[in-house]
Image (cartoon, rainbow, N blue to C red):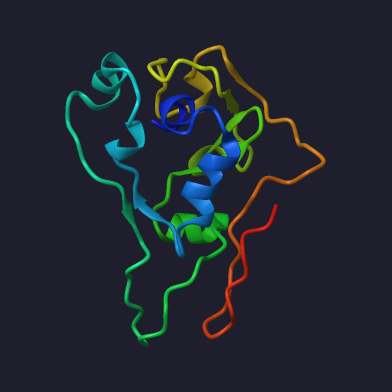
Length: 158
């Protein structure tokens, strides 16, 4: 779905996509919905969704046990396992690095030109040929900043 969103909704502009998915949300995403597929050809939408539609849901309206505003967190292997997170995505200039928590900290990079209908499985080792080993660029990808409760939130870094 992220490949189709990049190619169609965000006009192949990783900065615009990053703004929407990272910078414009206070906490994060609970679920990415079919609204990310606006502008995508119907045959691709059908292949990705089976014809179903659902909205994206952010975590921005969470209520914490102590009533403080929710904040972004840094996900480590331990917190990912504790929260049953299986996947992470890093938006890079040349593609999406897909992190599979059960299979390691470094994932393959799926190029932005990859057909979103390509045969992806739950094991990155079985993905189609366009997936490559990530190139660690001199500039880090844009990441969310973590704050402690009561600490002012700063913008995402580049």
